[in-house]
Image 1 (tube, helix red, strand yellow):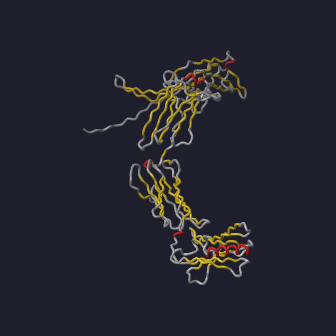
Image 2 (image 1 turned 45 degrees about the vertical axis):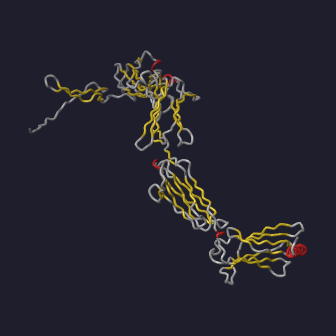
Image 3 (image 1 turned 180 degrees about the vertical axis):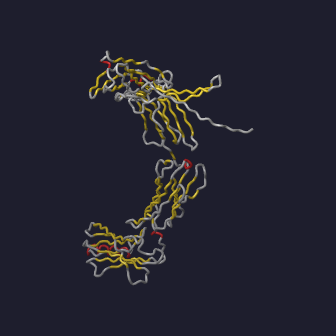
Length: 511
């Protein structure tokens, strides 16, 4: 059963609905320094709510609250309800001192504006506070000696009274050590930024240049604020410090005594130890055949990093196909994607391209046989071709097409200490004049060469300086005499003068 008070309120509401007279409620306070005022059952729609704050309460000069919002809803009887909300008083008042909030409602059905007041009196003002939301942002991988950033983002806090501290906890340790702005750590200055809702955001940065000592340690960001009973902490978890593998040199391809290539590849100064090295070959890079034997050796360096050398034995005849590639691929936690190196007989790094090691000068003597020799070395496959070309001015001819004037002799392949081969090709002919303007070119073709290589004698010479091929040697004879010898080659003409001299010295000693 309704009391008389309830019946009076119902009548008042019905009366307001019939007349469109606004029913102005009391001001309510919500968290964050916002204030609201409800107005019910008014008509027509146009209505104004003006907000102001008075501080101290004895002041005669209210300060307008410049920004507010109003939300309206239509009732079934055609009237409207509205809720007006002021902007937050954060930053507009001194929260710990008394103040008064006023709201003035104006509507054409009101004879005079209606004012409502909210008096803070001694009420606590903790609703102005806003707890910081804390997020620690860190890279997934840290690299030794590469500066990186850890970010502690704090948002939606009020007031701007924030204290932030960085700590580090060593791997396997319990105590926290404060991080200061020195050594491997740098803490740049940063400032809070005011947001549209009058809260603040702050982005604190810790710059760190990791070392392997940081592996497994944790970095903690500790945030203190008046809104917090105890600090908020965010931790990185165990840090993963890494060093990317370094490639020291291309794939090495020494030749063993059986004629196989022992492919070798080294990766150095990486961390952690776990690394995967795979050898593949062929145009489609299919997995290595069973004939390819692999071996890997791991060495721990003095600085805590690792070096690995992986070897793969490959039948040497496969490289007779210049398009046959061998690839080594490695994967490591420090890398986003696997990396690889590749080598074939046409690669610039292939070590067994033939080289024209020597070509003696062209010295013509009329009606006397002359021989030019070309020495080729350092190749692996014996499938090599040497061609002698004669050049007179702009005219070039193949000497092998004129067997009556030229004699070409190619020596067999000789194996060197590194199991590569060497050979010599010689061209003999008898010039009719010593003044002929000609030169000879030795051209070498080999499967490992994309283009032939050449060496020219250059124009004929009238003389050639001696070349010392064996340095001065001194031997003691049985008679007690000393014999001195030196070897000179590739000089012309034959006549040569040698002068020997020595310096007499007197040596003194005491016993």
